[in-house]
Image 1: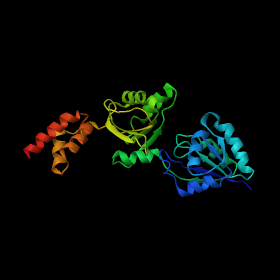
Image 2 (image 1 turned 60 degrees about the vertical axis):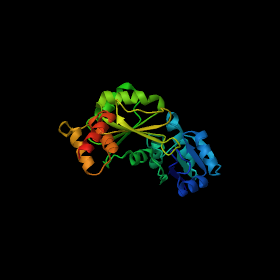
Image 3 (image 1 turned 45 degrees about the vertical axis):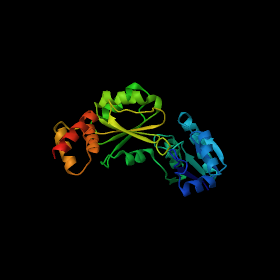
Image 4 (image 1 turned 135 degrees about the vertical axis):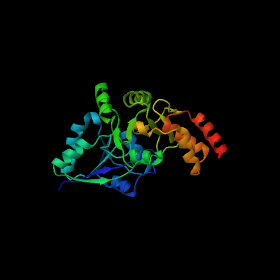
Length: 271
């Protein structure tokens, strides 16, 4: 009888962000297929788990999938993990899942953290809809094609980027989409977790080390551009503080925050 392949979610930063079921599964399987054995070993050591680790990364995904599927057919239970979050979502795993499905091997999901929904939860963006894009392709032509296809999407777009690609990615997004509002979330669940807001041309990030999630908002419709004074008046009338009103209007209208704050104070004094 074949074993079971468990797709296990692991922490995206804080090692405490793992489910009881995930820990139990990792402790019970015969072996663990992982993106980076050194990275996974740290997690296992933290929870006192000792298991056979098998490398499973993008460059050798197909060959590794066949070997793991054979072990499953021999009756072994295998857990598939990635360095952070859920396998198969901007990480290796889909090739193995497909092969196991074709061979009739049982597959179970053990869900865990996701940088996508975690970033959305701290962004303050109220639109519940979004499109997850992930990392941009390696080839320039493929990047341009993808950005061209997604330019007209009327919902927030979520990208992943590594620290050494941050400036390049922001510049490419600006060139493809124009100067849209963006929320940059850094080092989710870690000590230095930070959220930066601005536009693609002006967002200021204090430290470019770490892993980043970019949430790019849809373009403003031509008829929707707000008059800053009117927008401030409306917010102030609803009880929003001048500082918070200035922050919102500066982002919406792509204006200097300090200048908008000065206008907010003047409008408040006139009330």
